[in-house]
Length: 360
Image (cartoon, rainbow, N blue to C red; front, side, top):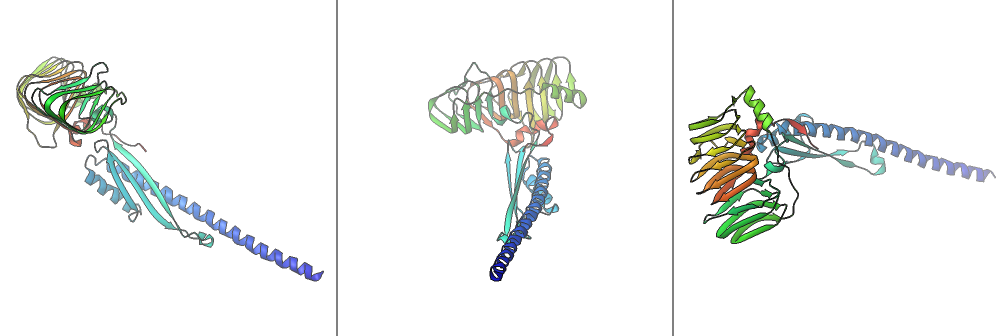
């Protein structure tokens, strides 16, 4: 009887000891989980701050990357594994960070360490840089194909092309090069034996045409030049502000330089051969709100964006080189054209589309 009682007493003591060990182990685990949760929150806050600060440096990816490292280091995460990526013409930065933390108490359960991760995406601007402005050539017409007629000259597009209808290239023996994506709502028809396209995506989604006319009007009234009648510009033209013309514009100028937007509510006509002579950081936007943009010359060199959201851009004769983008409701190409897009050709937007915000 006494032996049985002592046996049960000893068994209970062992069970109690084991239970206490488990309870203490789980308490340690809960404590460490709480600590890791705090560390994850700290890391997420640091990554958010780093992404927001880096976005202010865009489109300079090198400066943005340096800012990310500086912010993480100043917040105690300089030894974290960091991955930095950019998107949307270098107007968006994503920061991902990971750091391994040692458990303080959970070693009782054989748990040594855990990796904590955090990520954040910040964007500079964003109202207009998505959609149509992601493309080197964008045709918004839902009822008509985007047609390129080579007429004996090659066509080169550095960037991507979108049509809200179909796409047709009539080149015969002339070459068509599109380094990016050709995506269309309708079919893609290529009448040429010399075609080099990065990727073809027929039957893609419709994309809306943006309109930032009110922003340009406000900028012109505040810091730029506002004309209430049609204008003609002659000789050399330097742009360092927003120019708003309530009417049409005739360009008899031979040279352009500077950064800004030249806006007309009606048609814009280029009557001479145009050379845009400025440093590589210059970027203008030729913007017709409700009219067409005609190049009535043997060739033009423009650095910036040709934009007719409700009209047609017409490039006839000669070889036209656009260091930027062509975005219009309709586009007519008759002859060779080169369109070379890059993040820098959207610099003109910074005057009215430069807010910084977290998007993820």
